[in-house]
Length: 321
Image 1: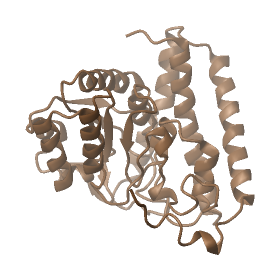
Image 2: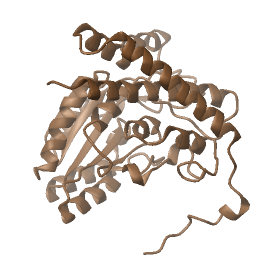
Image 3: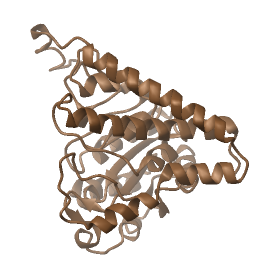
Image 4: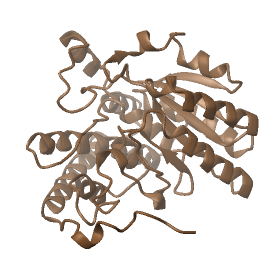
């Protein structure tokens, strides 16, 4: 697999933006500047970016409560995202969605979803629409290991096979469904083999390895675009932080929390691209600084942006067709 410098630099920029965004959001939330709950995607950057680098704005994705990474990987506007987290009027959803319900239809981001297993049926709808229209679009569901146990996920995979839909189910195994480990909650101990039982191709990859995710996603998305039906990809990447910011994480040891940081998607990417002379270190350093400035400016703009007015309260409640 040969990827151009342009693609590699874009991939690194998206992963670095996710990391910087999440780490800065952590600080802002702990200061009390961001309302609601925050679920960080740190440690899983290669999963979202490896998939979304194979998509464009016409393709749809649907996310979970841990959706910032998927938004950024799908090229949603970082400044508008930050304003949404701050509850500002110019946020992606007018300040009404917040962290767990952020969406951007123009980028094909159908929304984060606080309902566990809530997005696979949405993706089925998008995939059915694409097949009906014959427009070559695909739809991707990002679902955690906890959500993989939901009936909605099983029903969606079954329907995708029956109708031969251009849907890809990305099962992000980050180790825990809230406080419960994957090894306990998944009865078969194997999400990939269980998914294959529905009659669709299913593969497991290292979710901290951009190149492994990218290649698996490329194959699955190509199959879907060619009318060959759905696929499942399990990406294994343990989340670095708790289920939510403030989670005491009594369900895992301190040693584990240290060990998982040895499997850093960004450092793996740098080691591969620099070691094989695909990129130069100064190129990555430039992106690091550029992203730091971008996120810093987004926080500055969000903190002073206008709040929704009373008149905004009843807008966006109903839609008519």
